[in-house]
Amino acid sequence: MPNEVRFVNYSLQYQNLKKEIDAAMEDVLNRGDLILRQDVEEFENSVASFIGVKHAVSLNSGTDALIFALMAAGIGPGDEVITVSHTFVASISCIVHCQATPVLIEVGEDFNMDADKLEQAITPKTKAIIPVYLNGRMCDMEKIMAIAEKHNLIVVEDSAQALGAKFKGKSSGSIGLAGCFSFYPAKILNCFGDGGMLTTNNPEIAERATLLRDHGQKTKTEILCYGFTSRLDNLQAAVLNIRLRRLPENIRRRREIAEIYNNKLADIPEIKLPPAPDDHYFDVYQNYVLKAQKRDELFAYLKEKGVETLIKDPIPNHWQPGLNLSHFVLPYTEQLAKEVISLPMYPELTNEQVDYVINCVHGFYSGQ
Ligand SMILES: Cc1ncc(COP(=O)(O)O)c(C=O)c1O
Image (cartoon, rainbow, N blue to C red; front, top):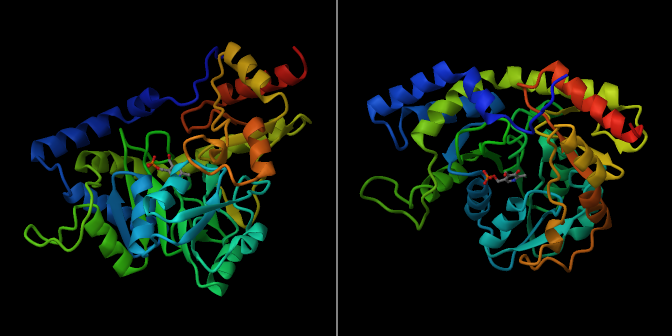
């Protein structure tokens, strides 16, 4: 039995591809290619074709992808943008950074935006919707897009956790006006720091994001707008190119691990598993998240057994004192904050480790 299962293992991930990564980084450094060079271009083209969009603009974070998507779409003061509270705070802060107003709605059993609650949140000021694909599962985009079209709203997909996920055959980041991805180390496709990408089929949005990431500079001598420093480093792009080639295999392995968890944890009445796979949703399991009774005790028990888990956001975003969002009342979201726990989930986990985690969860609920 393994006596330690880490929640993430960046070192092992690096060791497994060390030769290839070291060689690629050395090559970049020898070439002196640092900013917006061939590795960045290759990465953008590869991601665009991987998800099936015309344009992919690399940036320095998923947060900037969200901000630039809203800015490029003209969202600003006086506008309302609908998203969820049960997400990473960037899905909300991007709205505030555009001086627009966030409107937060409930999520459903799959932890994602409850499309049936969407229409009642729309007002004459509503301009956009940000569905968040939490844990690597997409939202019901058929319903969301139908409502968006009916009310003439922009949709920006927060795909930060869902590269490779699909809903009814459509890839995350290819459905709305723009898709936003993160390559932060904990993400399914990751670099050694921060990185992000905006994807779109709209050439104007792509052009605007390209300007915004580099201080509005169209050429060395022409500045078309005020912008930011938000480029993906060429060195990070070289690493991402290597890892992107492994992504389909890594997704396959994540889904395999999820299936083992699903099968072997199904008989514990005190926990609720993430939604089972079905024909419409192709989930990539960025995270494997349970709803668990006695969640905090389970966390402590697993820690004692050497299993690292994660309790993300024990305080819902709309209760965070610095965010001025406490006027939202979201009982299901508030309940989730007390119940959710993420089990270890990454391709490098062995079946033996997965079984160990499962046995420990069983041990906790059977009182061993
Ligand atoms: C759902 C969600 N949205 C947005 C982001 C922001 O991405 P980044 O950390 O690259 O800015 C993240 C990642 O942390 C995320 O999980």
